[in-house]
Length: 156
Image 1 (cartoon, rainbow, N blue to C red):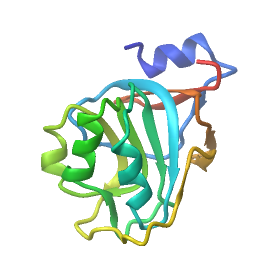
Image 2 (tube, rainbow, N blue to C red):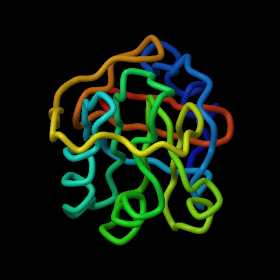
Image 3 (cartoon, rainbow, N blue to C red):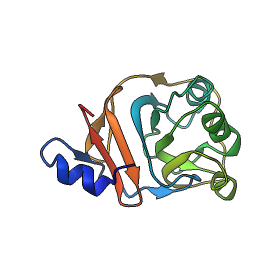
């Protein structure tokens, strides 16, 4: 995969850089793919449903509103992503089971960890533009992630 620094160097005017400090949790440190999105606030039903679908090498960008009160995904939900061919997840929120996440064959970036599970009311929406870290993540745009950060190109 091309590094985020190289993407930014090649597309300085078009590339957007996520301004959040996101930490690596998955077993794959560098990943890239077309963006799919989920917006959910402390509830992971829509997220789990989406990860149960074929990922086809896409990256799921999850806007959890930056909440540190609950984890939006853990080993079981992230395992769905790995099993269904998702390249990675970028989570504006927390994860849990961090030790187990490192053993999964999927990239995962998130704000941090919290052992408390999320709610299960089913609130949320999929495939809508989501905004955090100073950029808008639109379904279909290309996302590149590595140890240096997250970069998005609208026209891949």
